[in-house]
Length: 383
Image (tube, rainbow, N blue to C red; front, top):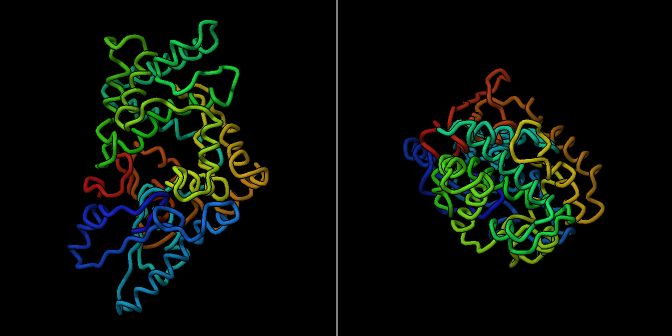
């Protein structure tokens, strides 16, 4: 099991479909944590100088060295190795099969975004369609759109913003002239829905795992709560409570301060700084509000995400660097033109990341596209 942009979890050594298969075929299971994430600290800190050693190519090389070492140590030279991963590690699984075919006999690349892209505006499109699969259908997304419009009206009114600050449990007063704070607020509120859709009913044991798309849409269409804006705030406060947060932190300057921290003991070291670095130097994947047909407003365009690269890591991390990095990633890995044998690409129709993955067999690959699930890794129902 290939690790990704977070700490390796012991639960994956005792549950998930790969464990069931291991029991069936009497296989040995390993889980390898990704460099720079979790407890894998190869450098003194996360300075920009040190982060240059963080990349998908280095992660693949780590995996190759790990397999070679275990083959010698445990006398496994004649055994067949299958690599598994979900989401970014799903991409790594496919790319490892591509780059190290002599080490991996096969791969299961679940929910794998294989095409690097700066403006991933389609993400909100899948989120919108996913919410419309609930019992409330378009009434849910219609209520979100009404709430977004009401929020815009509130921001532009002379009576803004004390009532709204209380309604949404904001940590700080909202200065509507600060466009970056406003963009961050709108993106964070949309993120409440993005996160739930992305991990809907995926058997997580994390905080808020019981909050599903159905719960969100029940809330957004419940007139007893009040106006659509009040319901939008109720969703926000529900998620704050579930995650143990007292208020919603939306200040752009605070976000930059946290993300610029290079200490391994900082909150940024949980994965935020490292993954942002990888998006700025390899993948993009920025979920902007530029798509026309989505209900979350237009306040966080692609420019808002791109500027964060230079704001966090310095002027060197410009749009041109990002554009060239995206082109390089798709060149070395093949993007959606990737063709592999003995590799399976499971995706769920509700998963927003499926828009960047292989979802049909027309490419010559084995794609399994399942109607309903979000992330497809780990769940028995997905295989």
